[in-house]
Length: 484
Image 1 (tube, one colour):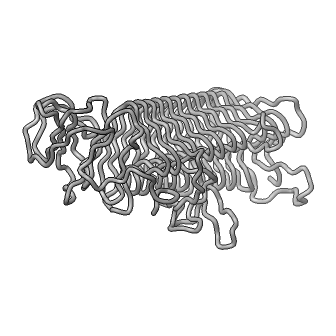
Image 2 (cartoon, one colour):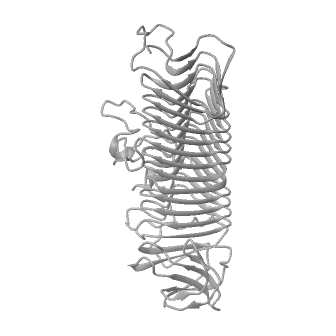
Image 3 (spheres, rainbow, N blue to C red):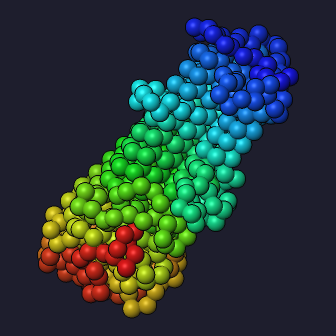
């Protein structure tokens, strides 16, 4: 075979129906009959110049030795059948769009797993996944849309660039080379204008960003598990999370965007650097900095908003880092921050106003910050003389013995910050370390039960919005990324 085995030259719409009980195989040669770059050469083992739909209950196995697996120059849809595609380049390629509603799709691609690449019309170049099961292993991006990517259902499993162990900081994926050229991208989900996720089960193991948008990223549902060699979620402009269950088990930075708004959902983030990084500009991992560092210019427009939901952060760098402003009005936030004094559990360069919700932030004390005095909810912070070992309970109660905080940090810590509606002006709070609690624990935060006292270390009387035993930084943080 010296051309595409299935080649649709001109048709308003083509439908390939896989008959129930049949096994269908399509394979092309390593080279094509057309060797003129100007010719109208088919670029896939199954190639259509017009709309292409694949349905039915049979199986389809495509082996693309020359280029792409299945491609359409218009819209590509799969509504059934279990296609299995192995391609030296892209797996499924629909120039105007790709739509997947059902079926089991397995792709092994040297390039992108799925790609919609129309860059001349903002209404095209999109991918919509409503259902089905996708297993994709890609050398480059797993699913890449030129404009918009919508996931509302389905079960999606992606491995890109060799996985998170083949980190973008170490293996050259997504980095700038010595000649200034942007190297290949190996992201999980990626779109030029907008990524929106409202449902589905998504599992990604990527050497580059797990989910990436060059503009907006919205998460409003779904169960998502990510392991990334770079950012877990990255959006150049805005990142909004209002629902869903997100678990980032590995990342360089967990969430990154110029404006981040959290209003719902349950988020667990593990990051070797910042848990959340608010900074404007395009992603530039490892550009003019230590490996993996993202360079951004601080801006008054950079903002972190936390209005609801549950956020649990385990960060090797700054826990929550805003190179602008930070406002919290609700929700539960637990920050297990750095153990080194070059970073802090919180780091902001503008102001941090807290008016609601519960914030627990522990970590090193050298760069520790508390909320701004312009807040309307009270905060207390205690910095120990010496670092406390991981697993040492910290307990804060009223002078009358009523529990306010019982927490067991999973890492060494020297600073404890609590902001809670339970704190009241004029009241005195006693800080203990050690001891035990009979109350149930979620994310190491105990509630209810009886506390058996450990060692009393301080008594703090609230007379201002922020009460501390000293040593805290209440003003601007360091430079971009919270780095001094």
